[in-house]
Amino acid sequence: VVAGGRGKGNRLDQLAYPYYVFVDRDHSVYVSDHGNHRVMKWKEDAKQGIVVAGGQGSGDDLTQLSNPRGVFVDELNTLY
Image (cartoon, rainbow, N blue to C red; front, side, top):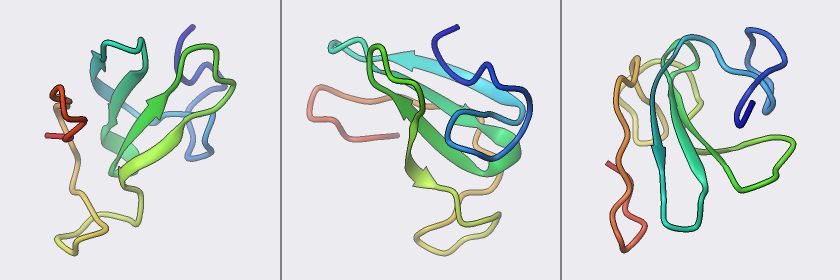
């Protein structure tokens, strides 16, 4: 288990309907957490993730996402 693993939920060690995974050159794992309207990042060997986008409910404000279904991070650490 590299991300989540604590059952379905919205804590930093949980996911709800993860859709896509991306691994960057530093071996950090990014997960589009569809059910929690956020993108999570787990650094290598982390026990919990950090929210890197969304996480403030579903919507179109700058701090919100609506059911994210993909994730990509470029060499400048820009999240798409």
